[in-house]
Length: 336
Image (cartoon, rainbow, N blue to C red; front, side, top):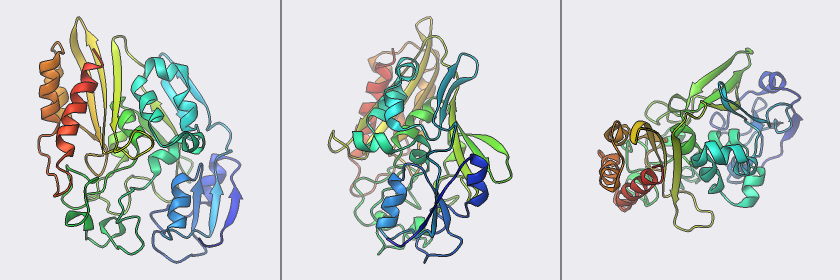
C-alpha cells in the first residue's frame, strides 16, 4: 500500500469540490497527484489498496459529514436513508424491520457484525465486484478494460449465469437486491452543486455499456442517500441469500420479493435477482406471472422457473439455476 494524504471533508460541497477520481478511474494506475478519492467506512477501498489495484495520493474522509447519517420516514415522502448510515444501524432499525422487511434481512446477511458496524450504505452500493480475476493484480480482465473475461473459460463457479456474454462478474451488494425490489432511488450530488435522484436500475451499469465501472458515478459524484417510496397497505417483502456457508460468504444467489396484495390477489410485485448477472436485475417475466392472481405453491414454482428463462450458465456454475428457482419460489411464498 502506498503512502497517502488525508483530508476530512466538512460538508458535501467541500467533499465534491476536492475529489478528482473514483476507484475505477485510478484502477491499476501508478499514483498521481490528482488521485483524490472518497472514503466512508472504507471496507472496499482499503481492500483495493492492499491488493495493489488502486493507489490514491489523497483520501477524503466523508464519514463525519453532518446530515448523512440519518434515517427518517414519512407516509408521503417515504423512507430516507443517509449514505453514511451503517449497515448495523439499518439492521437494528425497528421501522425498517416493520415496513421494509426484505431490506432488514438483506442487511442482516451482509458481511460479519464487525463489517456491518463500519460499512456504510453508500459504500455498499459503490463497491466493486469481488470476481477473483478482477481482484488479481496479475489479470488485466474485461472490467479493467482489456476485453477479456478470464472467467468465461476459467474458474467460474460463483460467477454470472445471465447476461454474461462479455463479463461474468457479479455485483457484490446484496443490499442492492432488496433496494431495487423496493424501487429505491439513489441520491447523488455533483461538484456543480446539483442533486439528482436515479432509480436503482439506472444506477447500475452493465459491463457492455461501461466495462470499467458498475455504476453511473463519475469522479465528481457523491452518493448522499437512498429514498424508498412509502410502504402501501397490503405490502409484504422477503429476502433470501444462499451462500456456500451461513457465516459471512458472498451470495451464490440471492433474491428479494416485494408484493402488494389486494382482495387476496397480487396487485403489484417486484422480484429482483442478485449474483445472477453482472448487476442486480429484475425478473420481470416471473413477476408478470403473479399479477392479478392468488399466490399459491404452484404459481410460485412457475414464477421460479420463469425467473431463470434465458440463463446461460458457464461450465462451473449451472448449479445456480435450480438454487435461484427454489429461493424465488420460497421468497414469493413468504410474502402471502
